Length: 72
Image (cartoon, rainbow, N blue to C red; front, side, top):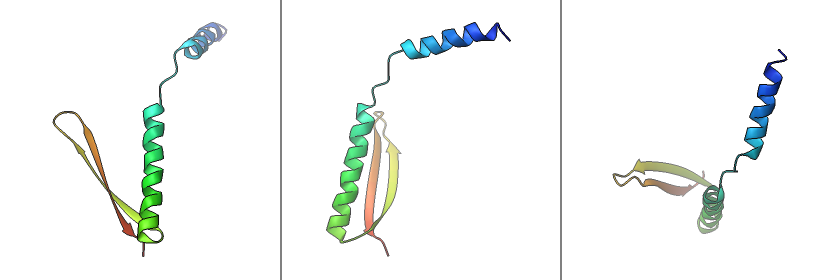
């Protein structure tokens, strides 16, 4: 059991020293999603429902299509 502690300490040190992941693209996409919802609610005059279609194109791009409709 004592042998596991140095290994765990080394693992935790390695994790702490590793570079952080860049999440700026994710945060930008989430901000754009919030703006899209706000715009749809303003345009449709209230709560909205959303449908999503996704597609992976041959060139490797991932396309997401959002369709907003007024909630009933």
